[in-house]
Structures are given as structure tokens and as C-alpha cells.
Length: 430
Image (cartoon, rainbow, N blue to C red; front, side, top):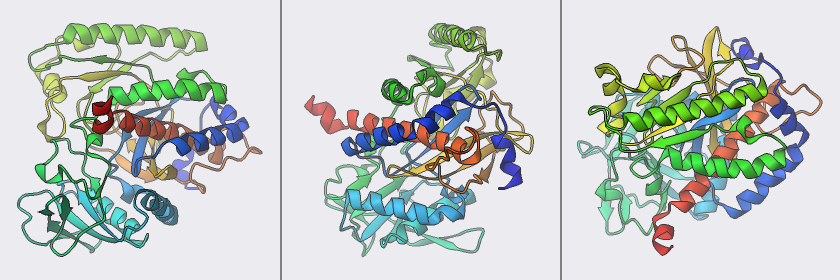
């Protein structure tokens, strides 16, 4: 085992880990039954926080951009899971169009695209990259730091189909979260699989909606697992009518922060937890860790200074923040080389395919680690979060990562149901 990661396995024995191990047969059967009823997203990533007394998902991303950070040892598992996803969506697929973000100068992101494309090609698909950038009017090579090349090509729309010059794909995979809205060229594609669907993008999706579905699902799962649902689910509140520049919505925000902190204090007393409660206020739509602040008292969200308001007012693509989710803060007791760390678990179809640690040397255990200056370390586990060892201690390596896999799959299932319930066709028919 990589010694740099060994600190991740140091901490109090978790009662919930023992429950997961003892009831793994029940847990896995419960998941099998649910996946027979629902079609999972093609891929996803889940940010987890492990406080020792609580292990909870704090973010669910449907457009994961860190495949380059996964341990290469899990490439075969990624290929197998991708094959299952392709067969589920379009069994006779031969060509796939991958549409990435517009980060043409971000080497880390481009390496993610390269790794993702490589996985898809190994499933037997012909994969090419189409760009939403208006300046890409001809095939444009992008050099990667490792000497490889990515070729971006201009999109070509013909009727209700989208492709490239001389390339008509069976399916289109978005690795672009549509924070800036849905481009017209992606609308009305009713002759091809578009995955994830357009309503998975941040122009429509809300973190609070996902949190509500997760909370509902968690209560059902907790009965099977024999645990208090609070142990694996963050409580939350929502505030709308927010305008940080104009200080609109401050009273609502302060009230929700105060109420949630009070709720957390009650649970801490119930479990004899001496930590100071905190909440995380973040934009209800958006990613990349933008529009996030840690709060320990309601007074902290009233009268923010200009720098704080500017930080919270907009997220990716300059999208104005009008709604926020106030989420229960979960500390991390995990560290790598003395720096705060949190696990990020990756999924394809309904399988866990690997993960890594997000590490930040300048952030504390109660702060957002998804911020400039973060680093990534591959998880040093031998099995991908799915094979507990009942003969070992609850926090032994395979068992702790099994617990990660269970909670990550719960978040994935919640995202699945969330997308079903927000499908425009289903909403229109109801």
C-alpha cells in the first residue's frame, strides 16, 4: 500500500462500517433490486467527507472531469463498466461523439478527455471529439503534456442529427456541464442518444433537488442497513431570491443557517461529539468549487464584505447565483502527508470504477478542498470499493473503501431518480 495514503486509514472505528460489512448481503441485494428499476447515468463522481462519526456525500457530479486522476490499474474495470453502459443505452453503437468542456488550455482537463476517449475506444467504439467553441472551424490538434495529441473538430448539424464532417455517430456523450446554457446545436436531437440528457446540466439541475431525493432514498436504505440516516447524509436547507451584490436574501440565509446549526448541535449532543458545528453555503447550481463558503455562525452571512460578495455572486461561465443550498458541514479526519484530504469516487453505469483523494495543503478539515492549490492522489486500494473482507477490522483497507463505495452508489442512485423525476417529458405528462 502506498505509504502516502496510509494516513487515510487512521481514525476511529466506524460503527456504520461494521453495519455495512455485517449486512453487505442485504445491502448488495437492495442495490440490485433498485438498479432493476432504474437506468443509471453513464458516469459520475461523488465527493465524500469522512468525519469518523459521519460519512456523507457532499457533491454529486454528472459530468466528471478527473478520469486522468484514477489509478491506471483500474482501466480494465472502467472499460468493462463503459461497455455495460453502452450496451444498456445502444447495443449496436459503433460511433460515439464526445463533446468536452471549452478548456483548451487546461492540460489536466485535456488529459481527462484523453483518458475518457481511450476507455471508450477500448469498448470497440470509434470515438471522435466535437467542440462547441465557435473558433474551431476546422480540425484543430491540441498537444498534451505527455506528447499525445487530441483532435477537436467542428460540429455539423444535419436535421435532427449531430456529428462531424464524414462522421455520423450513434450516440453523443457530453463531458460539458452546460453551465452557460444549452447551445441551440444540441437542442432537438431526437434521433441519437444524448448522454447525459440535457436536463442533467447546471442550467436546469439543482443541488437541493438532488439532496432531497438522496434524503428520501437514504431513509429507506437506513432501515435495511440498520443505521441512523444522519450518519451518512448531510442535512440541508435552501434559500432563493439571493443577490449577493445587492445583499438581497441575507435574512433568509441567516435564518436557515441558524436553524441548521441548531439541528446539528442536537445530533452532536446525541452522539457525544465535541466538534464545533458548521455549515457550507454554496450555489445551488454549478461546479468547480465556486460560490462556496464555510459558516459557523449565522452572523457570518450578514454584511459580507465586497470580496466575499464577489466570490459568492457568480459561478462558472459567469452564471449569477440566485439560489443557495445550506448544507451540513462534514469534517474530514483523513489526511495525506499532513494535508486535509477527501475521497472522490468515480462511477460508470452502476459500478464503482475507482477514485482518488483531493488534497489541499492550505485548507483545514472544515473547509472546501475543491479550490485552487488542490492536488490529487490515486486511491491506493487493491479492490474498487466493492469487496469487503468480513475477517478484517471495520476500518481495514478493503472495508473502509467498501463503505465509500456504498455511500457513493447511494448518491448515484439518487442522481438517477433525480434525473427521472426532472425529465421534461415526464414533467409535461404529469
